[in-house]
Length: 127
Image (tube, rainbow, N blue to C red):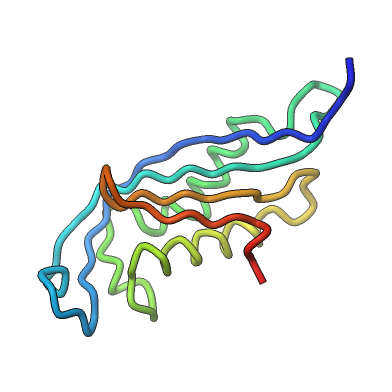
């Protein structure tokens, strides 16, 4: 069988509260979201046929991301305005650091703030 690079994705949810600084609408007030996070890694399956074990990816996201922001007030954690865009960039940065030495790459991140609103970050767009 031909071996090729492929993507794997795992989906997570977390709940956080925040308010937006210097924002004229109702999001200037404290409010919460149930976020949905999709993390996609890309690589070549190893000798066991895995790009990365889903359990290992789960542990990485739990340790590096969710333990820091789940059921937290984001304005107390971040030194930036906690928009969906900026939270997504922070998640990308944290996961990128923790992937050093792995045989796969962070390919894509999708962060849903509401059931109809989300941001997407692709590796090709990162400077």
